[in-house]
Length: 260
Image (tube, helix red, strand yellow):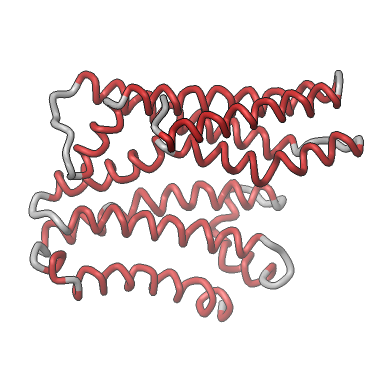
């Protein structure tokens, strides 16, 4: 248990302490601290940890364990520490959950109304994830496209697991974007500088939404071609992937130059 406590449990407690320190020492946050919003903030820790443990369970399954083995997590980490990548994945999963919790919890404690704070916290993440379709495209360009061309011309298989995961991520962010668009069009909430208002502003920008949906479609097409076309023609696959990437770059260029 010594390794688990020293290298995992204590850093996780320090992550929580980091957010407590911010709430205590940042004057704008400290002025709004009260028992109710602090209680709500720590209550939010439960769903974030449940989500983290869900993904920890999936990680354990990839290494030959079962989801029920999460009860033996300290023992498993002790046995595999320094030998497998499993402990590092578990550590990063829980740490990310604590960081995300801290952001939402900070939004809650910054407002006198915990409900409004919670909505602001959710809005912050919705705004980020609604734009993550672009992030998926960039991941494909940097982490897959150059290696895909190399593998295609060397007669090697493309990374199926990676492409499937990119499809899942792209679908998730596209669904969030569509939800933002529908809510913004049918909501009377004004666009503004607050987190919710910024989400409304994104959803009402027809040009931006159209651009992201086009990019999402190209992301999906890229992954679909990478999964199935190499079986028929590797040269045709390389050409198709290149054309898709060039089209995406052109779209992004148009976005940053404001030429929708």
